[in-house]
Image 1 (cartoon, rainbow, N blue to C red):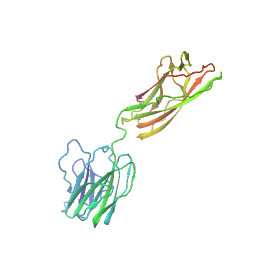
Image 2: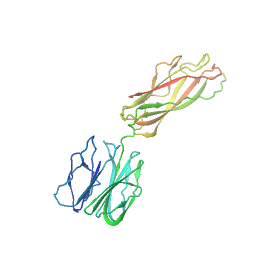
Image 3: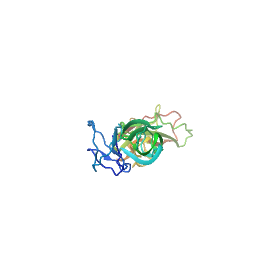
Image 4: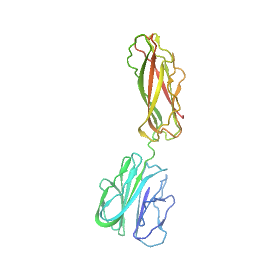
Amino acid sequence: MIATVRSTAFLSFNFTTPSGWTEIAGVSDNDAKLYYRVAGASEPGSYTFASVLGVTATMVGSIVAYSGVDPADPIASSAKSTGSGASVTLPAGTATRNGSVVYTNITSAATTTSTFGALTDACDQAGGGVTVANAWSAISAGPVSGLTASLSSSTSWIAQTLVLQPASLCATGGLTLTAPSSISFGATVLDGTNKTATGSGTFAVSDMTDTAAGWNLTGTSTQFTNGAVTLPANATTITGLSINAGGTNCGLPSTTTTTFPMSLPAGPTAPAAVKIYSDSVGAGLGIAQLQYGFSLALPGNTRVGTYTSTWTFTLGSGP
């Protein structure tokens, strides 16, 4: 919740605040204070902000509540601007997560109405010659450019902008793996000498647990066969790995401790799997793209034909 309190005392105005409310540093003004509170399951019908100085002055306030904000780190940035006239240029802010919300509060020294342009009016409170107007607009990650609001009359004003960031985008699900449906080594011309065929495949790991527990990927396979003809159990080698962040990423994957090249286990039935990637604790939140390179050794006596193998990959929690 965001609370705005505006006075007409024109001095350094301070308030005793209700329990749980925190003044937002760097954006509060002598005449306009902003506070935030993480709401609980049950909230009272009202809150009282009382003048510390005991000065009698006209005051007006408002509270706007938002859902989906990160309770541990709700405010990504804040800024304010002051001036006078019939228009307000809202101060810019910076968003760090997709789906952030920009909250703008405009308080004027006279009762006036405002047109917020691209913003959606969320709350208006007026009394005793002052107006508190609050507005918000959903935005994407990146800088929040200054917007202009028009006032119905020329007045002095204070504009305050907050960027509220949503809860982590990487806390929306579990730990999942999307593996390629097949990996092709292409056609190789056999001439009685040893040959090597190559292929590659991209594995997408989605860690939406927000636990930062790390994860690991293991692999095993059956031997390549063509009818009754079988390639050796050590025919398949993982030659290397490149790692890239996916579209939604909260923490880059760590450098794997697995050393390449390494053999992919194979047998008539798939043997015990081996670890082909290990992501450390505290890394790899979100989506990671793991692109592996493979080579397939073809002995000189390999017969012509189409060879197939069944590969099994398993994603597990922890390094």
